[in-house]
Length: 426
Image: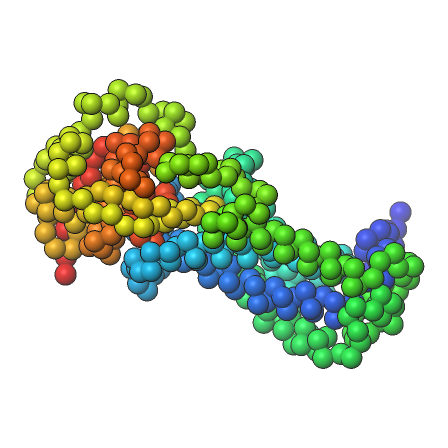
């Protein structure tokens, strides 16, 4: 039997035939407008994501959280500590802009979906490369946005490490995005310069534009419109604004936090200890006797020293307003009091530029972190013993936790048991 649909001019039935796609709303200008928004917003998400990885300082003590330091981990500077809210800003932008762009990404994919079913699928080598970049772009975008949104909500519905997969997926997506921009920027610019009204519900029927691009987007047999493009863009824009507000509200905090409907860690409670925590002491598997009267902090450097909590409280105490900013996008600023890390380094016999690796009573991936000399030398970096004028609660890291300006929250180790200071060569 002869399979006639294998002929390049005879596409198989279904989505490979242009008349299958009947929406009168698709046209090249609508796609170009959505593409322009993504062209502005996606670089913000990409750059802030790479900055987040830089803030982890994966070259120090396994800070990549299970991911090996590799050739894609290249950095031009150590992560700064000024301003203190730097990581809260960059990660807040990453999450908020990413959430806001998700409806636009879906709308853009809807607008170009007929092109995913072109026939023949490949016409020549150049077309094959374009199709490959498109597949990587679509797949990479969906993977990055879906896993990122699930991570914001702490729902790990996948059997792999989020940090590793999201990081390497970001490189695939970024490469495909850059290739797509190079290939499609002239087409987008041409579509944006057309005089047809993007909000007109029927302009797609005219087959505006020229060549395969326009033919693949405008339906040759459009159905009667059930909504206008104005309504379509309004729906997409409204969803984008609502999701963006969710990210911004939990990142900025304060009164704005009350309008966030999707807070993964709930709302603040009254009192000095009422701010959110990522993991309670019970969930971390901390036994009561581990943080009881027998607890001691082990300092290691040029010499080993053990200090009880009372001895730590007898050292010079300092207080600073510092944020905890988490990779999931939320942040909270509180007033922390404790001993400067640089003073503890001196107690351990380490003077001058130093790094510190903190080890928690919590076991597993999140039980240790290394701070660079930029953090240790900043006088605002503390081993915190009190917060907002009261003792730390167990959930907030009692007997002692690290707090440092502009670092990811996961590096503000709770339930600290050991601190190992190392010298930095000039």
